[in-house]
Length: 109
Image 1 (cartoon, rainbow, N blue to C red):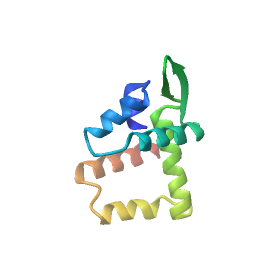
Image 2: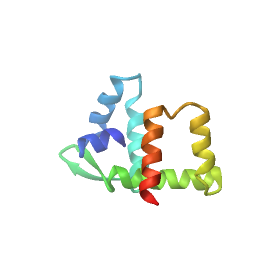
Image 3: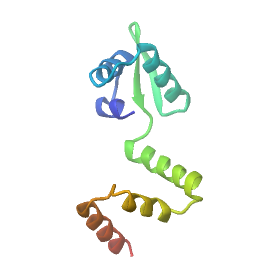
């Protein structure tokens, strides 16, 4: 999805070639994943010549918000606190990020 969001419109070949620069991956794997994302309505596709063009159906921020909400609901029974505690204990939140979080919490009150 990140690669499609970056490009706004992409073919399977576009995404395959971008992923191939990072790691070995089969073209059919990319095609299957993009078809799955289309079936889940994250992508739309339309035919252009002999290829399909895929484009995102929703903005990145909207999809990420929904995914995070779903993750918190499934894994932490709807409470974000255990997730934040885990991130802090696992040192995934550096001092600069922590200050931003504190500032955002204060501003939201």
